[in-house]
Length: 456
Image (cartoon, rainbow, N blue to C red; front, side, top):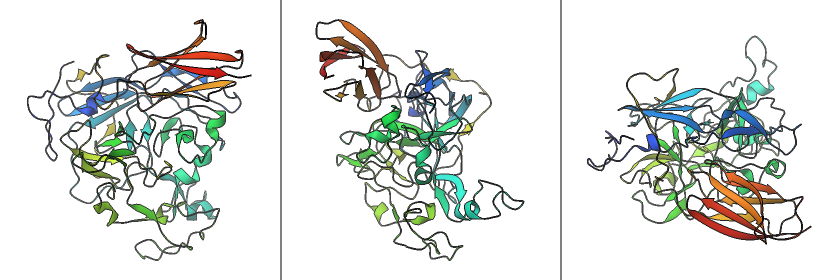
C-alpha cells in the first residue's frame, strides 16, 4: 500500500515525514475472508439464517482528498428479528461513501442532523440520529394520513425518540432496518452487555454489536459522521490532551424537570404534548431534553454536538471527535451518537460511482492499529454450562478469531469463529456429556485455553 501524508487546515496535522496514513482510510473492517451476513426471523426460531450478501466493508479507495468506502450495509453479526412486526430484513445497500480526509469545522450556523443516514460505522452499516420520524401531533391527529399530513411525517412538535419509542423493535445489537437499510440510532453494543439490561431480546436471539464496552481502555474508533469527523465508543481520555486516565464520556444533555409538555426548554409555548406518564416517560420526546452549557465546560462532558476536540489513539495530535454516549449503567444516553447538529461541514455522500484517480487501500494482515490489542481477552460463560457456551472477546477485533472445543482427552469436537466486527460466538453443547472441556481461542500466533464444565 502506498502511504500518504494528510495535512489538516483546521486541526493539528500529522507531522511531515512520519508518513502516517489517515484513519478515514485505514480504520474500516475489510471483508477479506468472504464473511456473509445472517439474520433471525421470528418464525425461524433461535438459529440464524445465512444471507447471500457479504458482510462488513468490501473495498476502500482513496484520492488526495477523499476516501471511498464500498459496502453492502450488512454486519458480520446476525441481525433481527424485530419483535414489533417490522417485516423488513437487512438488504444490500450497494453504497459507496465518499468521506473527506480533512474534515473542517462549520463556522456558520450549525447544520441539523436529519432523518436517515447521518454517518457510517467502520463495518459499513449506517447510523441515524435520535428520531424515528413520528411526532406527537401527527401520530395522534385525525389529519395523519389525510390530505394535509401524510403518515409517519413529523410536524416538528414533540418528536419521538427512536431509542425509547422503538426499543421493542430493536434486535439484540440495538439495530433495525428501514426499507432494508439496517442501522442503529445508538451505541452499537448488544443489549445483554449493558450493566442494566433493558431488553431481553438477546435471551432468545443471540447476537452482539460492533464492539464491547471496556471501561479500562480508550474505546475504539467506530465510525465517521457525515461531516467526516470520527465517532468513538463510550470511553476516552478524561482530559483533551490525553491525560487523566480513562473515563466515560458524558452527554451535556439532561432530562427536564417537567410533568406537562406545554413549553420547550427555551420557555417557548408550543402545541401541548401528552403529560409525563408511564406511557410517555421523560425522554420519550427529543424536546424532553435540555442542553447544559455549564456541564460542557468540564473535560469529560461533551458539547452540544455530542463531541469535543481531543487526542485519541488514532489522532495523537488531536481532532474533533464524537462519542457514543451511555449512562452509568451503559444504557444509551441522548443524543446517543451525533447531534442534534453537526460540528463540521456536512459533506459525506453516498455516491453512484468513484470518479477521478484513486488508489485501492490494501490492509496488511500483519498491521494492527495501536488502539487494537494483539492480546486476546476472552470470557467463557456460563461456567458450569448446560446447553450453550458463549465466548466473549473484549473490545473490537480487526481480525477473525478461531475458537475450538475439545474434550478433556484432547478429542476435537467443534469449531466456530468470532468474525471481525463481532465480539461473541457460541457452542451448542446440548448433545455433550457431563464433564470437563477445553475451549481454545486462536488469534494469529496467539493461543489461549480455558476450561469449562458441562453439567447435564
